[in-house]
Length: 482
Ligand code: HEM
Image (cartoon, rainbow, N blue to C red; front, side):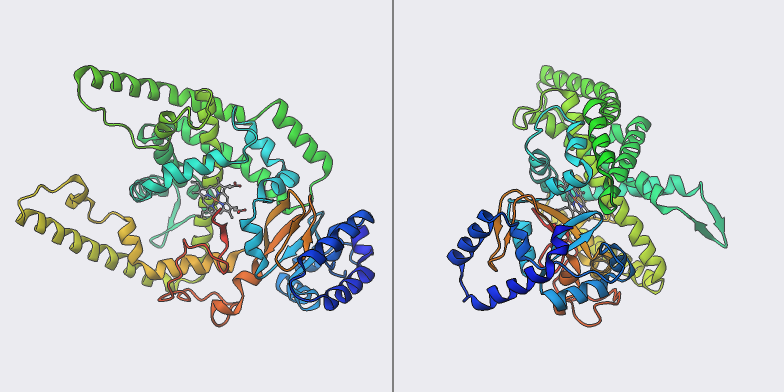
């Protein structure tokens, strides 16, 4: 509040200071910062704070009424960086070219920002026994070392499980005029994703286990509740209670224990088969799921026991399942809102599979002519898998998804907290402990997005070499890839 009150004089003097300074002011700005600090000023006072509308005590109402209008006003009045008072927090909005600096500088921590808002660190740590102080670096390593190299394999497995779960579930819904009515799509996508994630993370045995699926679904509900509190003002008392509950009672431990119970017989059976294969002198066909790779790298990742491995798996489940089922649900709403696209996307899908099928047939013929065997990978039964190769050909689907991400993003999102005083390249210093938020509007509605940026144009990116999976300064739904 003190910052809001002090805004007019602080910002006026700021403008004078910056106007008087030449470009390349590293030393001068450092001296200025030191002087301000010595005088007991917050470094963030150098950033103007957006004025309040008469009668408003925070920016929440103005922001909620029209996010675009609010941000346009602030950008016009204050430029690319300004402070706001939103969701019970004083935060600095970062726009334009400085966004990349926030994402790529390790001094800006998303985990710390979420910890402050929600207690996420305490939440995650209550699931695991080791790696408490490494942010989520072990999880990053599991993703980059285990999951990413096997994405092509996992894509097909995911597709299979999404389809079988959908087929099983749709029978439970009402049918009218030859249509199936699903009024609440989120639970069905959650369940579909739970099966797919179980198959990839823990293997086919777990994907069939009702205990594992129920555990995933229940933990996602816990995660969603915790996550949602980041976009609301939550009282300090509630946050303190949340942290205390997770530190002392560790409710996530119930889910971890369920996973331990479900995985113990699976792991024992795998060990038995491994030993059996060793005795017979044949190679054991090692399961290619994430859990097996985590067990194989037990020491590398500093795990302490199976409970700890399951705790880390649960964190992976929480981070992946919530986002993917949420996005899948939103995707359905966009398809429902733009029904003309459905036929076009369906035709593209069929055509892509036809081409892949022909390409695979050609490969088989070449192998036959050279007298070579056709490996399992090229079996005709797999010709119409929705493989990575097939997805690459679905350029309209990719554009639709990218446009959905661009269009649906929260206008202010992705909080980061400064772990040190951080000097940005424009000379402005973000003080240690300050929370910044990304102005997604400036990234997703800039001139490089093409015409009519406020409209949903499904084929905006067709032929533009801008894939829905490619993070960049003009596409931030996944951050910048860190
Ligand atoms: C459509 C799906 C997804 C979306 C939109 C999404 C989006 C995001 C975003 C915006 C962040 C924050 C990035 C930052 O602040 O720099 C994030 C973090 C994270 N995501 Fe995803 N994600 C998705 C799927 C997944 C999947 C499938 C996994 C795991 C296999 C995953 C694992 C993680 C992890 C571990 C983090 C935390 C990184 C950290 O704080 O250190 N996400 N995700």
